[in-house]
Image (cartoon, rainbow, N blue to C red):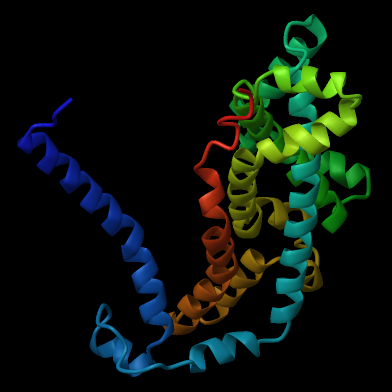
Length: 275
């Protein structure tokens, strides 16, 4: 269908506005992080006169910075590893047994979690984890994995509808059990949706503020990076350059991760699997 010129202009205008909404905050973060306070006082939006890295050095040398980075990295990596193992396994079992009442009921029960806002379960989470003595990093990992199930299983089950059942049948004829079929055939074909889950949840976990605030705010040694930045921003509220330098440092790992994984999101790895 041929798109008319006015409609095409309107589409490009919306795309341009959307691009500005994305690039604008990133530009301001980088620019402010690399400017001196004198340059900021002269012009808030102008680019820096040079490569000024003193703001980054002051943030990095702040007491406890590397400790909170380590906390965030450990929590994020362990949570993602458990998610990328458990979510595809559960999704595979549900998708291949969707006609059975038990699996269908479990699937609907898990999906119901999508409609429950975090604010409704925030206090129960705190009370339950407190009673279990799990107001620590282990408890936080457990909560991240648990809360990721609804969205992750919804995406994986929907994706696995495109993976032909003939693959399972062919592997069974070749002597593969359920575990070998899943690990050697199905799991590699799920890489596009696994990459999507990886990116979505890594963004959520790395930048999450509410759950760490509830579960790890007892002592600075337990803080994650968002908690550190929140308190650091309060300390240097008059120095915007240091605040934006902290924001830029927290953005860097996720930006690098996205750069390496975004190509896996698009692509049909199942195309041509069954001839």
